[in-house]
Length: 569
Image 1: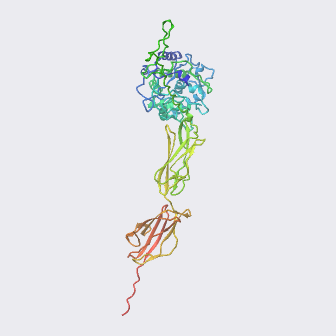
Image 2 (image 1 turned 180 degrees about the vertical axis):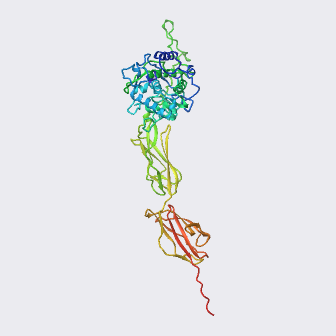
Image 3 (image 1 turned 45 degrees about the horizontal axis):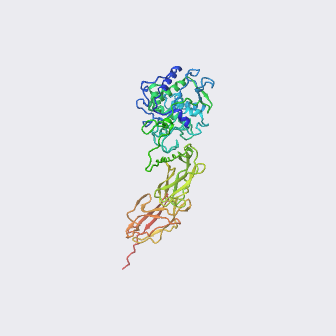
């Protein structure tokens, strides 16, 4: 990586010779590309009209370093836009690795289908890919188009580069302190969070995958309604990628070169930039490069410089020992950095009060490269006031992920209270990843309720019904314990409004009640309180409805006393 960085220029270095060479290259190649617009001909760090390709006023790459090597002055033999020339045609620099070339072309087709007015040419993506990463380090990608190890720029720590503090917890760049440009197209994580794409259909937006990165770059360049066939829009797009006119000229020169013709080469055999460029300076806090100190000259006659002042008593002062600087804390490699936490197939979380949930909460941890992450502590926490607990009576449990990255919480037990709650899975320390699952507890239910006897219920006016009423609630044939039952005395079950006369229950003060909320016992049985008749004879109905919708109607009769004939005189 160090050698790679030495071949790149930091943002802000004005190199007139390189810019002039770019112009010469364009002239020698008689390239068909549009000329640079007036607004792009100024000094470094110039933006075109202040337009940014992203949601913030930053460049996609964070203005990180880039290759400054220019294409050869001799263009490919065949003019036009061919990419099907044999490998022997033209210079080796005209060769683009197969997977990388396929990714650029696919991105062009995809964008043409969704944003045809942009007129994105794949050769522009190729030019940016060449300048940013040497076409994914010469096309070193696997069968899916992913680099075997992340392509990372230097830490954007303000020491010679832009200062961009960490925005992703090191998920993409393995750096939890500062951001770094990532992948073949060198996106900084904050820009990737907005523009990242899944172009190869693997369900992941991976900046280290050339297909994902190329499509993201294409959509970014097309932002703001740009038409890349218009020179000014193309310049603005490239400057939004890296805000440097030197960068624009370098990309433009490769764009024109690739428009003259390219050919496909096998993955891994692309030509990497080799021309040395300005080494990266290490500026002091004041902004100037620290010079290397020269050794102190000897005195005439070859004597050594005189020692420092003597201590009282004639002894010379000892040279103080320098305080050792502790080594910087190493940045964890991407393989050891948590990248994502995803649902591992957890279904709907529902249960009846007092029951056990059929589903168990399961998550999968992946590292920054997208591979499963084993032995990662994942903490599951229940929130809400429904009395939900994990098996063993705990509201919080911690589980280590397995080799496939999955971590599964113990079974959940529902309490007696119905309602909604959540389970949250949390992993990682520097920048934790969380997943939240919604769950619910429904009240105990019964799908049937019946009287345990069929005796008629009759009472005289003002008297108590002599026979007690007992019922049994069941659910799927089994006794339904703890089920809520509402008992209401009505005049007509078809119009179940509470009656204002006739049979009634009594409250603690002896006042009539005609609606009661009751609960079945452990055997699913329900014994009603005593029922009383008032002075109104007639036929009445008692309707009992369970949680779950089961209903039974019981008839109550209040008989008037028989009139007896007076005795004869």
